[in-house]
Image (cartoon, rainbow, N blue to C red; front, side):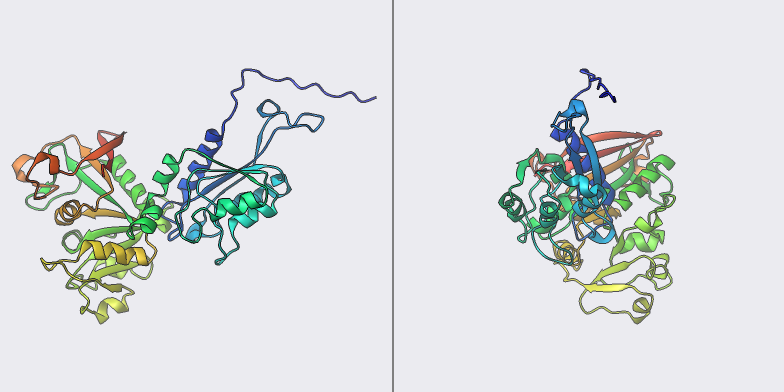
Length: 390
């Protein structure tokens, strides 16, 4: 007669909490950053509770099992929940779904994710952040509850930070702005002669390219575009396809049609923000999109309107790479949300150009202040990451 195999339980095994599984979902969501606009980057994990040999629930000791993982796919679809449920299949029955953002409740190009969770017979949903989109905004949670699914909320700070760009477009009508700087210890970005390559080393430059991949768009001023003739793509191995939309503030359309930016416009989108009356057949033939934006009192592109125009086109995260004039303008306008400052262990002094110009700070209490999040060591260089203190 067959005998039942005994199960050995390791009492020292730490029990996984809701926060542990949400951490996995957040890590999955990060894979979509810069690649899913206009949608948010969402992660989902489906966990089947452990069961004893007799079929009864036996908790973590009997082995909770992740049966499905998903994250928002390129272009915003399929959604994370759809991917995770497809992987889980029948094992989703009676499972718990951990989602970094409230499941959608409206019919768009695809059915609502809340409906998919109900159809899969999920027993419980733990979500980390509410979706302020007027088409969702609590409706996803209500739909789940109405179907008899237990809905729990977890700490939202990490999830809101991850999707700060999406939340900014919904709540403020503009994308999240990350300002990237690369300077010496004394805040110099180039010699007065114009020489700027290379202030930082290869590890820092590679990290900068990763930043590009994590943003929907990269923005520079026409001065930088003319001086450096950059490509503004992500040149990490295998990640050229993760290059962001290139955006240039070019009020008078001075970008040459034979520039590296213009020549690559058909393979990597290039948007020029110009005065409304400006047009260029030569640039248009290259595949460049020209977006008319009103000018401010100084005859420059109005930054607030420019960001709103990008938001209307679905951009949720913008990486501003300069130069000094654009950096100063964004800071002076109070439009910088995150600051990524690469510092090289060198000094230039008065022989160099300052990273930031006149901000019009008349008193110390008026200066822009940021909260430091972390410091990364990149060879001899460091990356300091900050969030603006509202």
